[in-house]
Length: 491
Image (cartoon, rainbow, N blue to C red):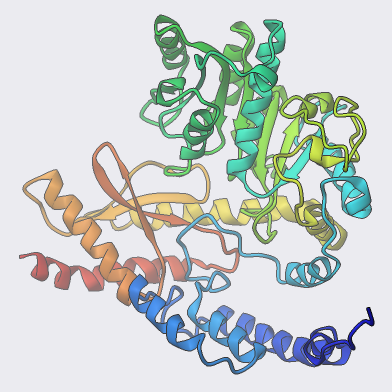
């Protein structure tokens, strides 16, 4: 059979000259986006549109293609403006702009990461970086780990390692034969929901999550840990791990990791740190004490894509002992490797949930290449400092009805504004939620909300180092301006 000539569409798609023309136009648009974002020229940093309205827009727009640069401009215009210093909402990195250039290169190469032959550069680079960064974090020599797409996945894999480690101690293998469904994990009642989800995925159900009560500072206590362990034992549960949060998502509180390490060692438990957001504090001389004790962890999850300037998703799962990274999985795959049990560090499919994954190590290497690890400490100092600056600004307005939920330890700050007395907690909550919704629709800044002890609070996560004290004051002013109309509407 004679091969048909190359179709013109395929010739167009792979044309280098066309790629250059498109790239220049899109790059210039992105540069202008940076300029306008930093100048705060947009009316709102989060261009809120109701979900159904946004869907209707794209249902019409996607029927009328006008070219890639135009589509990209519209995506930028309608998306959250994380590069805008007034965006103070979720725990999403404001990437170093040159990370977009790295993405362009790695997207073009598209090397996978299941085995060395699919991605030799990123396989070798990842192994080197995970060992080196682990040592920077205080883990012992001989540490290592893997990179994956997100902290949720990293926490699941770490707990799979904990389960198999415990199973090995009992001369049984849950990965190969399953288990009795009676395993359990201890974790703060304020921990990220992904730990609960991981335990359920592992087949241990809701009862496999031993929630540890917290003190007034939102941290686990020694008494709380002991009580949670005894409660699990009374239920016939087999606790295999304890998870320390560094920090919790809602409040930004850091568990006492040294205390948790002591507890884990006393009861022969795997000690995992969910440090997706806050563990980069290890790179700051000023804030490193927040994660004292991390050097005693068996495993640590840390997102490079939160407060380390790397685009999402890019997470490191570190193990104190490199060999433990082979605990979670052992499966035959003759087309990839010949021996499932052989600990080949260069074939990452043996150690990760994913088969194909992006060239994650290149993203991290690019930061170190341009700035060194010092930039992570500088970034932490700035962002955590912004958290303290916002707390000070809120406290300076106490007489107007502003209050903090707690003194912030990180760049997460929870607060609220009650300009008058309300006759119930429900009325306070209704006002706070209504004020936040009005601010979402009309405010220049973007703020979210959370709940503690039945009370609704406003919540900022300060991710942009270009945010200034004046932005914080303007955000608080914006709520004060909107409050009277919300009060009127609520009667």
